[in-house]
Image 1 (cartoon, rainbow, N blue to C red):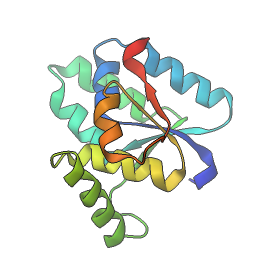
Image 2 (tube, one colour):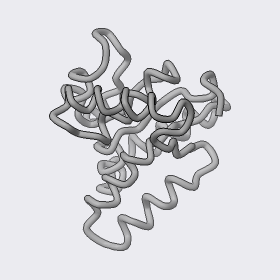
Image 3 (cartoon, helix red, strand yellow):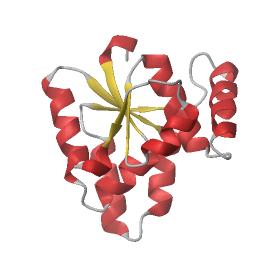
Image 4 (cartoon, rainbow, N blue to C red):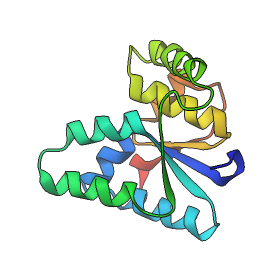
Length: 139
């Protein structure tokens, strides 16, 4: 996955909203796929969303989303390794220790991508002023 391939990063709040029936997440993935680009899902956000699911149906929906060709699951600490994990941790510190949000912010910054969430105020705490945050709660 190259930096230019990723258009949007989904955080744990967006993934949880998807499981709860928020159609804007699926619509966003379809739009990005139509552009020939990808949606990044940080692995820590996916794990947090799995943890928040209430049943097997929710878990199945997350698995379906994560295996969609337009979606790339991004591991924490891949390249450049320790520095990636450190930067995600520093960002998480600003979000009261929310590792998933720190990882989502780190991924958005690394790929110069939009961050899609249903919690734009939380995202604003960890991202630079003026960073593009797509508010999926408004749809």
